[in-house]
Length: 262
Image 1: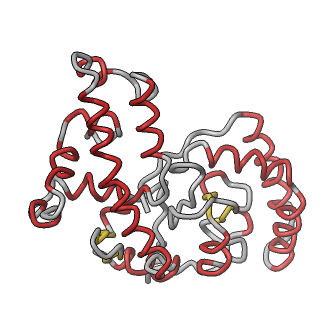
Image 2: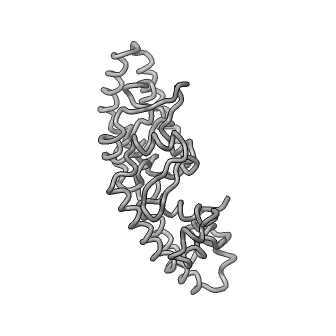
Image 3: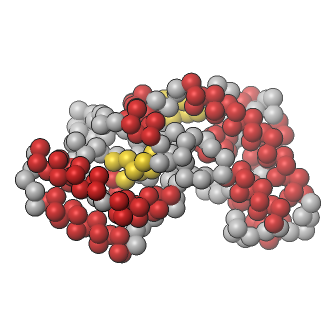
């Protein structure tokens, strides 16, 4: 799971959501409101299409699930479930892109809160997951740093075997792709200053293509963890079997081109 920056909705879509929320507000609270919310949600395909497009616009890679980062985000998940907060059915800040596995098989209607009623489940558009979770690159498993991290791993099934093996594969894939990226950079001698100030879409076609390939890989959390851990104490031990990768991860140009600058 990585931090994602939510973008504002077009005004026309905001107006649609406001109208649907007004309908729910005019429905009696309790079971009636929940039934109305689920009924509206199941029938408003045009609105859901607008929402899915907006979520896809800031999802990692190629529309990846905002929880596991592996599968395609096919579902619009209500961070606060409809069963608990039907009034938030059409609230933009309550929508996340999720795969059916995370949404329907793991999270479902679960929404643990602490004794003060605050959410324990992380919201990647609000929280910095790295403050709560540490990804062990060698095993592909998440280690929780906080109670919220522990709950998120459990609720979303983030350490299920398919995901841990996928992250290990992604780690090896990045180990192969990053030297290729560096080779292309080295073939463009004399443009370092340009690359450091240009947008990610600018640069030699081969370089832009390589960067799109890297950014489009599943498990974006692996590259984020690699970049973060390269600057941490003990990095030489973590990357002891791939020293060349550590040098790339620490290079200023890599940081700029892949958006890991402070």
